[in-house]
Length: 343
Image (cartoon, rainbow, N blue to C red; front, side, top):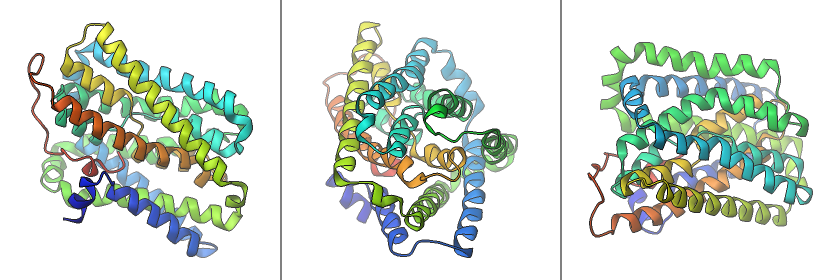
């Protein structure tokens, strides 16, 4: 009831929970033994998160979607080519006006995979190609577990990204291994997970909140927030909005120029313009050990809210078109921007 009320006013309930978590970390940060316990809990939560991803993802759905290779190629190019290039341009142009951690966070945002749940939800609302959106988002996250760390090496190592061989081992142990285990056990536990989506979504969201609390607690204890001004926050927000607008316009024009149907265009726009906070924050926790993680993930948190609002407006505009071009896709069970959560 509360979530639906907030959604009417374009307010993401999960973002409120994130902001509340940041506030708790500011007032009651974990330190000493508490920080050790929190970090251990984060490792377990992240592993569980990716185990559930693996158990939910249908290999057959991914394979069928891959057959639409032109659409998948365009989404992939937007996620892992266009976004990083734009991020580098913004970092080079405005990086001198921001703390190093925020610049790293801006680039890190640009090399993350797409979202899963919100991409599918918005595509369904807009009467787009839901099957293609499911595949694009899923494949993006699969590749992201490998490509994002590699892009961190290429783009952030010289900027103090702090990537190391230990990070590769942590990615394998905390992300890849649980994901593969989930895929192997999917045959037996998949139906159970499908029947209990709502309570299990608390695991997804709770894991992210735990990582955010640990990250911002560490920042408070280290005193990193004294390095950030309101001007820094305003500039990062504006850069995120400019980045989102550029990608939305580019993916829309490219899909039309290449002759995609309206349903395919919708899937391309929504999958190609998103960045996953659900994958990004756990990855940042592994890839940037001992650094100002709160500042690094801040651009992603700001971008997340902007993409939800912008895509909610776009989805409604697409949905109001008089006649669908081609075969209309069915709207999935998840059809609320707020239900998309952190994904």
